[in-house]
Image (spheres, rainbow, N blue to C red):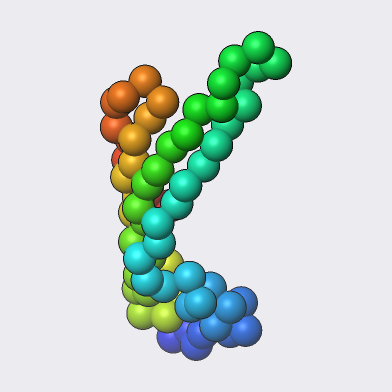
Length: 68
């Protein structure tokens, strides 16, 4: 079975590239905001599937990795 990219796939292609993220989370009314940073790389797999791989810093100083 051969599939061709559809309109939805073309929309997702806008996400391809390397992205830098910055976040700020409010942990409670009496606590200062917690900031985080990360990088995500998104690539196309044949125009039908998209893979996003990320890594960043956690508020406790640890690191995180993600795959979507």
